[in-house]
Length: 255
Image (tube, rainbow, N blue to C red; front, side, top):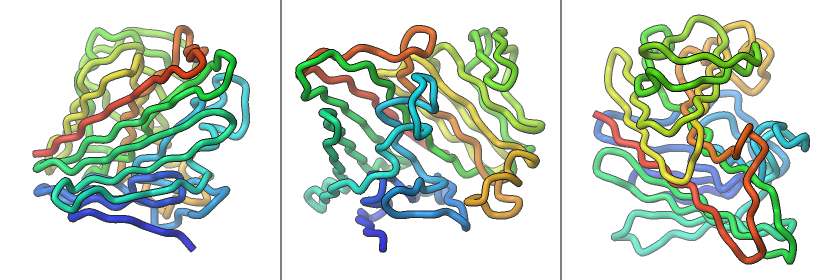
């Protein structure tokens, strides 16, 4: 049984401290799979997964994307007039805090990690938002022209030319921090962030999506992930001293 907390336009799950819905004047901003699993030990497919304390298996640790999104968090709702939600969890000497805030045309979300141990810890943080689009074939992501990009499928680096478009599986890390703009046939979504050093852009494409048991048939066409991430130099993490914190912030606006 999953537990959800809501403001007027935001919905967060205690499973993963996970924002699962963000309504706006232009409609729902986040995709959520019809076949997603949920609950402790499982990862919700869609919304805004919290990625911590490492990204994927870049640090050589399993499970992929860390324990945060598979754990049960404590969630509280702030004063009604603030239309905000707070989630927290502490595990393995790391304390995570998430704040989600409604905006007139979208939302903002922050993630703070505090090292409560007596040793330096190497960590990575990311938001993994699934942004709802009319069709991935009509979608493009702007803002990365001239930015160095690492293709995770081929392990090659190149310079992005023009807007990012999609034709099959796409998994690249932009080694920069520009504002990202998603455009489709219906609207524009602008993503700005602070505290990151990279932006991951991902869509599984048809073939890879068929292998994902928690993604509904054909639903790979309904989203694109644009993910502000703190990965560290050469994607090897950042060091956090005892009692110190790192914070990642993302603001999403649509029109």
